[in-house]
Length: 489
Image (cartoon, rainbow, N blue to C red):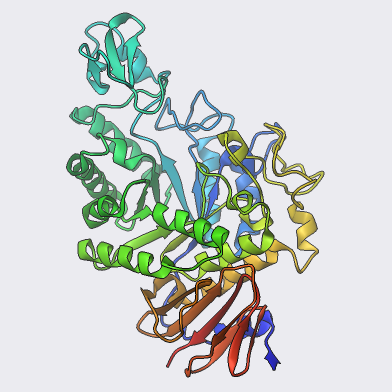
């Protein structure tokens, strides 16, 4: 029986023809407060991120998504008080411009969170809107007839008058039926493209600018916004948070967003690996892709496992490192623009409430970059090895992530290939299998997502590249949470 080590896989798979194409970037989501402290005050900041760009480059990251950096009264900053400024505890505009410049020098794109469904109740617009006969009153959604309706709150200056706030009393919704609001938001977006030269935006709560059921008006607004941003930067990247069924997401891909986060896939990855069954995974994802193609043939999928609003998947898997590695391997071999959440590469943990999903990154026990804004409840030295310790351990989870990012970066078929169900192997309950075709290369990907050894028939096809935990002779023997990839003729 012939056994293949992971390094054989790495060398061989890079033999695929990658010269005529370029892979889509792997993005790294940074919750700014928790990532890296650049000035010693215990809070993550812009300079802290800038100091870690080399780390991200060495990991293989080609893009970063920054959670909100605008002034805000909350720790998370998803309630803005000034769309054209940076919160002083995170840094200055000049520091941010330097971050973007240095990131670009390292071939790393920068997108920033843009939260426009609502502002903070501390925003000057809202404070002015509560006054009688204020020119800013139309900036928000006001009503007097709200008896029995949720999400309506009293004007502090006139309790009978109510304002609408979908998410929280202190996050009043902007009124996008009022053109000056639309113009102000477009002006703010253009400001960051021109002034800081960022590459795009992650658009928070994109389906809630109007009611989520009002798909037409939501799309009309984002189409108007995209037109305005493309007039400033033709290749601007707009990725929306549309947490809805696939038929709704598809409408945004047609005319208003470049991509939308695939929450259906996020749920599927954690479900199938938690349960150890592959049944229905590929068929469901293929159906989603087929639907998206009817709206936009060259659609772009934004894929991820979990983010700042969800329990970390290492916690979902009960700290099972093999399952976490398998989840990331699966992500790295699926088509789309891929996103990973800071700390995934060291196996960070985190569960609800949100603060515990957003805990400080563990650089080293005494690293000055460690943020200390809260004491980590889930990821600490008793549960997660800090990065410095993992860098000296070739078996650490960090190196698994780094290897798979390198494989994805080197082989465009994984990020750009068309996903197809496969008939080349007999499907078994614990297997997820699919083909990827990109016009240059074709591959067959097989994952054993179960906690058991399995044996499957070897297909009569060409060359094979094998991840650790697989052996091949007449049959394929796969250890728990292992992967094998064939190159198809």
